[in-house]
Every structure is written in structure tokens, then in C-alpha cells.
Image (cartoon, rainbow over all chains, first blue to last red; front, top):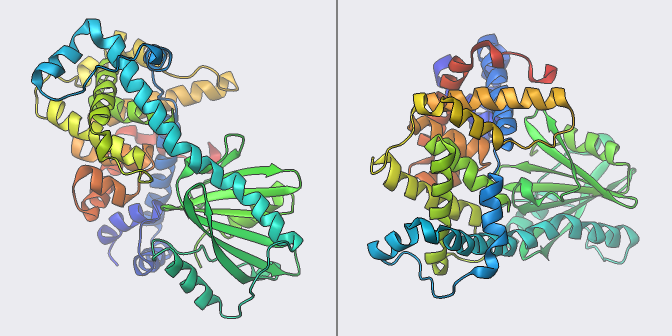
Length: 269
Length: 172
């Protein structure tokens, strides 16, 4: 592979948007080419810095206040953008506060409607793990891991696949799996069992906002991934995102230990 | 409220100034209100709102119906003051806060200088956490175009930011 051919693939690699073939090709090139390896590191650093910079941009207080506090004055007769005259009326400065209140109410309601169920997935997964560990959830054990993954993916119409982790170093292996509906979303549950504490892996479509608010965020500069760690009692969980899919590991072990596991095994096998 | 911050962030980097960004967000919300029946529950609300915002920006700004701030306007003292006022002030340590402010300021200024076709994918993917697929749907362009523009845009940014971003990320 030539260096100019590698440039876009480096971008895709950082964003975890490559096919397996592309990934192997560009990773091979990075091993051989020091310049491209440096470019990869610089671009990854830039992406990280952009996220930090973006987090510093927030809605001005005045606009937020307008949208949050004036919702009660919403005039139900307002009919939005049906023609230029209506739009001019809405654009008139004297109606702006009312206008802002109306749209603010929409955004808040819509955001709550959309976001609230998403927030449930991460925390709702913990009792499921406890139920599995305690034996209250009966598991049908399987020997064929490839088939297990395939069937789980089929159960969600191949929209996504369960994250496959190689935990053999901890002598943990996938022994069962099932599909669970949480917060209105399909969640693929894979159970890893062996000589160490059982780990349950929950895979579901989502993004970083699925992490609970009290989760501790950690950016791994090597993998360019944000990890979110939280715990409830003796149960710990670590979440990270792989493209459009969230991977949530849950186990009865200290959060720091589980974080080490997640950081070490955060890529698809 | 996460979406409100996100919409404002995207609008800010698209329009390059706070006032237009606020107008953009309000108009987006108004359009969303008018088209709420078109939104399918359970689908990606953030992407849907962002698509509305981008379409409005493209219609009202990119086609030149209104004056839009360029580098010189965005760099006026008044705008800089407004920009800093938007930054949160409750970060843990003064040193960390200063570094973040400096970083945000430098990146913001650099972003304003690169062409829109490269800036928008960066704002969506790097700052909005959208996948290539989602960005391609918002921008109505192929995924490959998103990737190539991202790649070129990031290199432009690296060039503009110079040595500032050359440090090993683990050192920062």
C-alpha cells in the first residue's frame, strides 16, 4: 500500500469505520511506515482535542432559559411554518420569546421522550447480570460460539452483532446468550464464564449518551475510545462504543479491574 | 437537553458566530415542531434534528440569503467576548480550565478557516459523534465522500494548528 492510499484509511481507522479487510491492510502499512504511523497518532490526537473543544461549546444561558422557563406561556394557536407570512410573523422580534418557548417545549419533550428510555439500558442491565449470576435466569448453554453470535444477530434482523470478546487469557468463554428488550431497544446478552468471575456483555445500538450521568469517563488515547465506568453495590459496569454499537460489560468485580478488562478487549474479535 | 447543546454546537461551527447560531437553533426547533409528524419514534432524533438544522443552514446561509460571518467578523473582540461567555465555568481546576479554553479557542478559530465542505463532516463526526452513515444521510452524500472530506479536513486543521497538536496525546 502506498502512503497516499493509506491517508483516508487512517481516518477510517481512527473513526472505527473500516471493513475488516481495510483495517488489516492499513494496520499492516502502519507497522511498516513510520510517517503514516506518526500521521495516525497526530490525527487521533486531533480528534480527541476536537471532542474536548466541542464540549466547551454550550447553549448560551439566555437562550436556554428562554426555552426552559417560558414553556408555560406556550400559545397553542401557534401554527408553525406553513407559509412565508406565518414565518414572517414568527420571525417578528416581539414574538420571539413566545416562539422560543414553543420550540423549547418541543425540544425538551422530544429529547426526554427519546433520551429517557436510552438511559435505562445501562442501569437496567445490572439486575439482569445479577439474575444470571444468582441462577434466577436459566441459561441454555451452547458449544458453538460462532452459531451463537449468528443466531443473536439474526434475532435483531442482522442490524448489529454481539460484541465478541476474547477473554481466554482470563479463562472466560462465552457459554450462552439471549436477546433482551431494555428501554425499548433490543439488547444482545452474552455470558462469559470460566475460572474467574462471570462477565456479562450487553450489546445494543446507541451512543455515548447511554452512559449513566454518574459514570466516570476515561479516554483511552491508544484505542481512541471513551470508556464509562460505574457501579451499583458490588456490581460494576464499563461501557464503550464501537461505531453505532455500545458494549457494556458487567461483572462482580472492582470497577478498576473491569475497566482493565474492557480496555484490553475493546475490539471485535 | 443534550440535543440542545449539540444543535447549538453544530450551528455555532456552521455559522461561525453566536447570534446566527442561536437563530439557527430556534429555526431548527420551529421546523421540527412543524414536521414532528414526520419523525418516527424510536429513530435517531439527534440525527433528524441535525438534518433539519443543516438543511436550514444550507438554504438560508450557504446560498447567501443572509450575510454570514467570515473570519474577520468572527475574530472581532465583541464576538470573542461572546464566545468566551458561552464556555462553562465550573470545571475543576483553573489550570485545566485554561488549557481547555485555549484548546477550544484555537480549534474554533482554525475550523472557521477551512472550507465548509471539509468543516461540516468534522463537526458532525468529531464533535457530533455521528457515524459516517449518519453524516452521509445528513449531508446527502456517499459515505466515501464523508471519509475523504474528513481526511482532507483534518489535515487542513493539522496544518493550521501547527505544532500545537503534535504532542503525544498521552502527554497532554
